[in-house]
Length: 398
Image 1 (tube, rainbow, N blue to C red):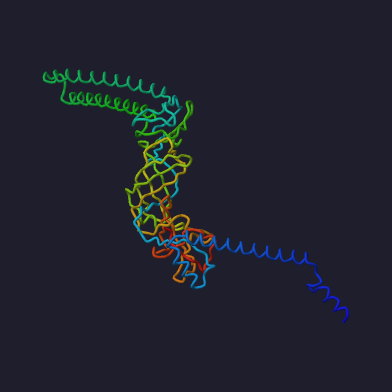
Image 2: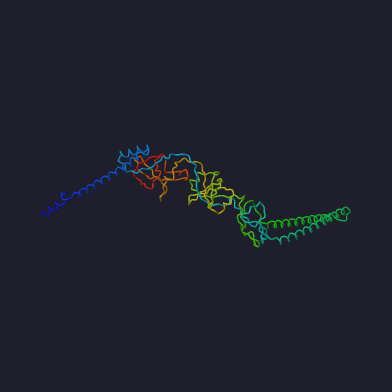
């Protein structure tokens, strides 16, 4: 008991000296002033934010306060509606000559004497691309030409003998049967002349086929021939020519996109590695669909430019009319392993996920082809910080 009395006596204010009490009271007042200043500063900041936040947001904040939702996150929303926008189909594909014409040996072939063109040259229809040695055929032509001269000489002799026989038949020196034989001899000689002429013409035609000629005007895409090479009709294509230099892009499209297309639709094709686009119409839409991939091919005619190289890769943007659909800023569209989606705010101000199908994405926004009617309140930004079912305070930006 005495010990407790001693401790109480020690802790009583009367046991402290005046300086210690004054120091303790000063510290207590200083802490009170600091806390009051901080509280006043926070209230002032909140007042400034409230006054400068705009008249449109005040009713929303007041409503949230009345409902006890002061802690709910504020989000910007938009009701996109629907509007007519150009429907652009973006696809990739390969470049090729619209009419890729292989050129080979039309005749019996032989050793190549000269090659007159290179890949990349423009040629006319019928222009000689390469020649094959024709020394043997030339000798045959000379022989046939000489045989024609012999046949003509025989025919001339047969005609003269026939004329003399006709003069003598009236005098009775030659019988009618001998005259008929003279006529037959003349006719046979004339026939031999024609046979020799036909043989010479055939030989000259074979010589002409020793020239490898362009079947049409166009651009030489490939040359597979060198002087001294022995070729024949079984050598395959020795040149490839793009008819009139026309190119095309063959792009793969889904069945749904093919249904929107028709020949004549305009397209813009950009080759990989180039910033230049080439315009052209769709000239053919595939009449069939691949049963494995459910895709078909659209073929776009393109005028020749050096950037369009057959076998290359390109991106095509095809303008397939217009479509009426919602358009959203790119910031409103999110994506994950399930695909593209947006967050909408329902009537209870709760966040909900909505999967969407996108169309053309450009500087003007992303066209939503499926998933939205256009009457929803869509979160414009900060969607990455939201989750389905979250309570928010929506407001429309001015």
